[in-house]
Image (cartoon, rainbow, N blue to C red; front, side):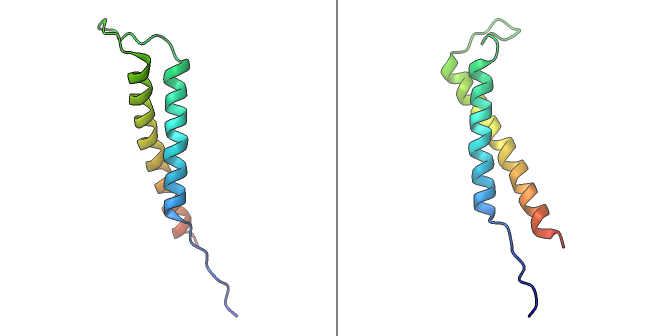
Length: 75
């Protein structure tokens, strides 16, 4: 009987990456330094958490997708 090849679940990989990225980005915004830019603009805590959370979700989702593709293509 030939061995059965298992494929990664892409939705699970990407979803986990997005959730993890949002949590890490939000934590970085919440526990990071001040919300003032070098140009003197001040952002509220909720908007900085949202911006960095979404950025983290996009980055980690992309990384998770690349990892899933690499796992799928290995022999």
